[in-house]
Length: 173
Image 1 (cartoon, rainbow, N blue to C red):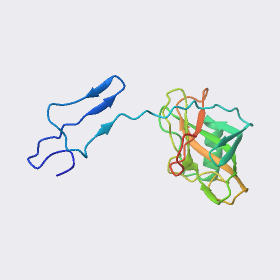
Image 2 (image 1 turned 90 degrees about the vertical axis):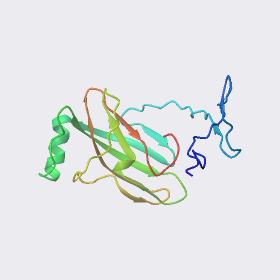
Image 3 (image 1 turned 60 degrees about the vertical axis):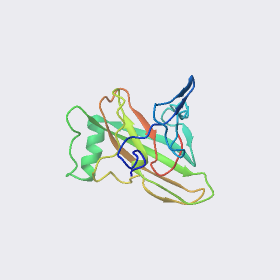
């Protein structure tokens, strides 16, 4: 049994609680099987201009410099000639970020905690590459700071948004 089917292989039926009532199927589900509609947490993202600090969970983040397109590619290839131009239809973006750990314990931050997008709304994380020095990654003690570059691709350099989206810290930052 997989928890979704009975011993004969027939799917269990269940009740689904909805705001307008409960939907029940003709077959009774075992008492332990119950699905409830969950309300998605609501949040409104805050867009903060370059140079202004923003708090995201235990971090205070400030983007102090942005390089886009050919300027970003120049910095990236200067670091390592093996780094390649962005794929067709995309361009490089580099953000120089200062991150201060405002918590009372040591944390780790990495370029993979960030994703960027252009006008298409597709969030892209740093691809496999040799990032320019200094790269934003490493352990950060309580109250300490680290700074470095965060590279990512965007489809349109005229409208770039970077999002702190750590896969290791829960929450909506």
